[in-house]
Image (cartoon, rainbow, N blue to C red; front, side):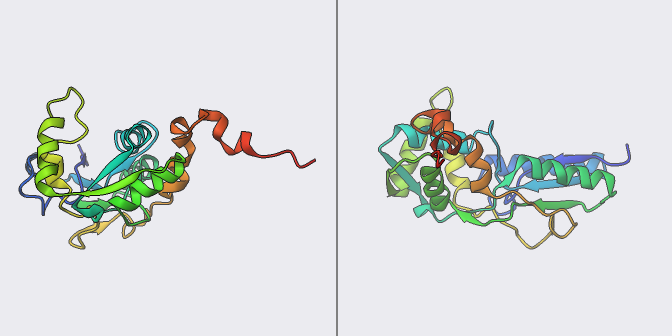
Length: 212
């Protein structure tokens, strides 16, 4: 095998108190031990119509009158669309890029509160956003993780302490000549109508008035 491409996660070096981050780091170590010519891609949050990120949040925002902001909503993300990530993988293969670790990010840096505000705008909803004290957040995480499909776990809460942006320690997708081109609002708008009143009939196609 000439090259092995492994998908890891961004921001795992700092999140040493997270089981998720430690498992990702151990996975990278195992890959590099067995495949010396491997390339490790560390993407930020990956989003698309079938993700468990934007879709879960829009579902919650559609149902809850109040939405909690952990760590005051200040955690920074650089969400990357799935098609931009697949383009990076293609470039790594076709251009024979052999960087050991490449951090993969989208074209925007957005904090958690900004993401929620954008999603609310896209689904045309207004909700009360409240900063949640850490002790109460920890308690809710303990309860949520008992559910079959938990919306928040204690480990995810720990991860939210750390920014999910470029570390500056490794090359980025922009530096290898594979910049992300898709912007968060433009892409989420394509499927956010599913959480709006009227569904597909809430889209611009149906809202545009006949001016003739």
